[in-house]
Amino acid sequence: MAARHFTTPLAMIKKYAKFALHRYRKLHLLGKLFIWMLLFFYMCMGVFIIVVTPSRIAQFMYDKTRLLAATRFGWLILLAALIGVSFPPLIGHTTLVTLGGFAYGMEGFFISAAGSLIGSALVFMILRLVFSKKLHTWSSQNQKWQALESVVTSKGLLLIILIRISPFPPWVYSNSLFASIEAVKLWQFVIATTCVFPKILLHTFIGNKMAELSDGDQRGHMDTRTKVLDVCFVIGGIIIAIFTSWTVYNLVQNHIRHLEGIPPEVDELAAEAIEDYDEEAPLLSPNEG
Image (cartoon, rainbow, N blue to C red):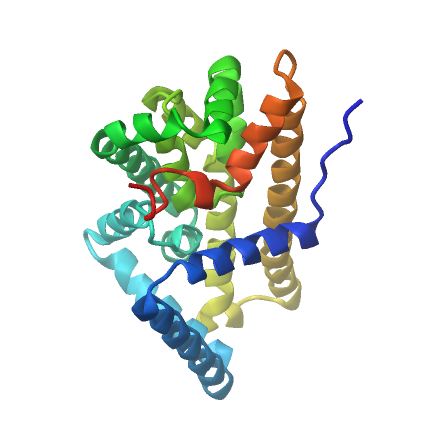
């Protein structure tokens, strides 16, 4: 029996770090300079948070999100932002989903779900349409991608859903990944994307609880028990998100590597194609001609 492939949380963190380092090395000088400027900005933000105090910053953010929620078409701004960050190389999908919960409470789920679904579908269609010729030429010459195509074709929607709900690749690159797999149809991709809704609901819930804790007026009317419960809800939600992401990733990798009716070597190549998608995917690599 083949050895069970299992990824520890530390290994998963290393994978994300390796991915980030790989993307950094592929950047031009200006891109690398931008990254360093961004790191410097975050360092300054850290100092700013310490000096100003988190409670005052949280109150400021709460007040501004209240203004957004009170704006007639504020929800449309959030919807458009979610659609925008679905296109590579933009990032921030989870942050915007959490912001939706922060600004609109649990009703923010519907905005986030709609924006995520529309954005990912648009990415899928546009990339598939624009790069269809390049995709066909490239995939016919890549062994790993052929293996992934054959596995997806053989196992269909269930496997597509499993790959979609996996935390790796991240949201924006997952959109590109599926657009790169010719065997995946738009309707399958849309259905698979709806299976990410529970995760969106969880992050909306976290944002909602963070908003309750951010407003000084609401905090002032809370008893200690309620405050502790809200903090536990936020921390617990984050832990659940991390644990489920780690669990799902391992399940997906093990499932792909042990598919019935598929030769083991094909399984392995398909799993590697997903793991190395940032290097292999034809719609993500600027070096592919």
